[in-house]
Image 1 (tube, rainbow, N blue to C red):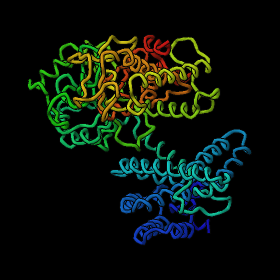
Image 2: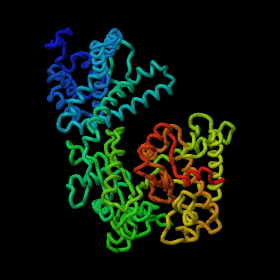
Image 3: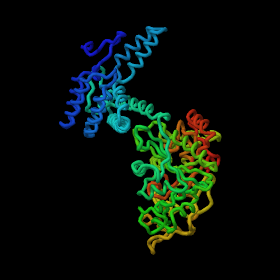
Image 4: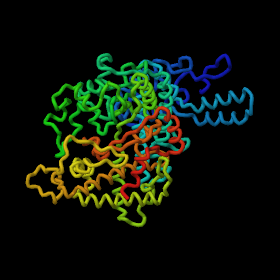
Length: 618
């Protein structure tokens, strides 16, 4: 029967003329029935399987009709049925282990000559999953790349769900064999089922195939580098930019227009098949000096500058995008230091990659490399290229350390185990022992507990506006080494409570605390401790930086240059990193060497001023 599925070529080789010849229709139909899908979705999948089995290949590749049917069927299926189709692609159209074994045997028999070359080719062909040929054919169709991007995003979700099922089964005490079978894997010789929507290993194979295809399709040589401008770019592209911004979401067309205005640049990478789809884009501000706060590069966003009593500094609605002083927008931008007249620094304050399906494709590094080259050519006065970046993982890390400390209750075993492993320090400083790092971390957390008590704050209030109110005097003081503190428009010595009869000694009331002049020392201590903890989080890394944004920039060859206190006072920034932001320096001549060093050693390269924060406070 297998011979009936194959055609003999002139060279005597066999080719399978149907996409699903190796699999057969009956196992797939049985798997669809066992999935217990809604009747409409079940019929769609059965029709797709029958078409795939009966449609001949087109010069060895899946036909255009099959590729179109896969896309249309997937788009019409419900979420559960889509997971089932992913499971079908992952398990039934994966790598043929029997073919791999046969190819390996031939490879071992042939020691040299053309026979060994043919054996290598046979091994490569056997290792290529069947679904990869289908996906490659889809990618060559019109609209195929966009479909593959969305498909991989769904595969990543399904893969995470498969890992969660395996973890849950392990937590329930299941044996490894039971765990694997419950997540969709099967014992040797047993047919796969779609009930689990694919096991983790099969989905990982499917994810790897998609990543290889997309990495090839979006190779830097295939991409277009484009500057996006308000007057020139198509409205459809501007609309995508407005909706795709992830780091600092835009609040309407005026916000977008301001980010494309005087002293601003927005660059994107595009693919010729997707001319109105920015794959990744970066927003930059040209400044005279290095900014200390996000509002310095986005002065039109009044919601970024919070007042000391916890509300907007100006009476306009929080969604307003305007200059609160009433002067023209261009004048407000110039007053902020953003300018077209001989700027000294280019500040990258937002880098967004809209599609989760391109995760792992190094588009961001390619974009930043081209942007730096373009700006150096267009604006000769620029001598510094830095970022103003969030630290999205800091709060989660600090909470985990705090909770573990509370559970440990300062026991002698604090710091042991995977959760407490303190990695090695970075930069060009002497390497401290792990035990010393653990003691330093414990000392910082002990001091933080004392500072919170002295400031009448609870730990959870570190991630809210209460922190700003409690540390305002410290924020207005002198900057610590390696720290750029903001310069507010006024310098109050106390923070007034919203309640006229509030007692400052009673701590925060309704999230808005009063701060007496006598509490300036605890406020400064709390501020310095949080900065030291952030330095500890960023600088001490084993293999790679803890923070995803830090890892991205360090892999690009940048170095950690500054920590900014109270740089972003919005709710989401306070929840992420207590309002702190950091700057990474891009030195074009050092990028390649820095990148190679970071990948090889995992050690974070940082300016000496930042590294010194590891020892503060003593």
